[in-house]
Amino acid sequence: MKELIDKLEKEKNLSKEEFISLLKINKEEDIRYLNEKAKNVRDNIYGKKIFIRGLIEISNYCKNNCYYCGIRRSNNKAQRYRLTKNQILDCCKEGYNIGFRTFVMQGGEDAYFTDDIMVDIISEIKKNYPDCAITLSLGERSTESYRKLKKAGADRYLLRHETFNNKHYNKLHPKELDPENRKRCLRDLKKLGFQTGTGIMVGSPYQSTENIADDLIFIKELDPEMIGIGPFISHKDTPFNDFENGTMESTLILISILRLLCPYALIPATTALGTINPKGREKGILAGANVIMPNLSPKEDRKKYMLYNNKLSDGEESVEGLNKLKKSMLNIGYEIVVDKGDYIKIKNNY
Ligand code: SAH
Image (cartoon, rainbow, N blue to C red):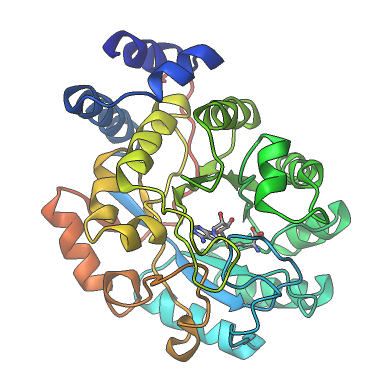
């Protein structure tokens, strides 16, 4: 196992068979070796800095019906909300004052947020905060739409591919969602010059080790600037309510593998990881993650953006808990910084 880990560190890649072997890692000693290597690679590139992103969940209306997601259109128990432009600007103001330099606007695929409306909001944020980065996570849109959003000033876009394998994709999504279109979106985003993020849920229903190996190969090829992974967590009002959750342990292993595979990537210790285990966020950082995305959404709406059961939205997960988060990071030797936190790539280093 250690030879495989060394090989991954050195070559920043493995064959599919080797990935499958590596993913079978289970001895505590090997896992510690993997986590430690990943942490060192991350420290060599990003030092002890942790970047924070202010997450603004702009709407939980969604036209899609993904089987895993709590805000799917058929969930009529979800209480729907949509933020106004002014509410979004207020979130940015509050976030800026306490040190956020990236705002992430995420939402369901809500037809209300047309290109014109998004362009207006993005331009206004950029005008008010020219020293900040804007990240979008609004699902699948047309090439032309992505182009307009980029031109208006959006810098980054998060769109998890969810799973590379089309058969697996079709078990997680209804037929109307085409895995090829999702991949088209990711290629568009890269071409248009967005810092692009992709990723998967760990332990999603029907996921095999081979599926994850394919995901790793796809990620290496796409070469994304950001990689978001977290455990699948079931939601009580979805078709997947009876499925087992993914685990913290397998998520941590994957964070480390991804750090060695794509050394420069911005990898968050996600909310789902913090939800599945109270120490998840810290452990994610110690396994090689370097980003945390606290919630900047208005308090009264946060509980409504319930993608899965018990999703954290307060405590260290929230903007009010930023001081607590700073302390918990200091405790493990890391420091939250006021920084846009762009992707860096130093030539000939790694
Ligand atoms: N509509 C946007 C944003 C989706 S929410 C889009 O399509 O990209 C962001 C991510 O949350 C999703 O990509 C998915 O990977 C994750 N997610 C959704 N439901 C989840 C669940 N039940 N457990 C864990 N993660 C989930």
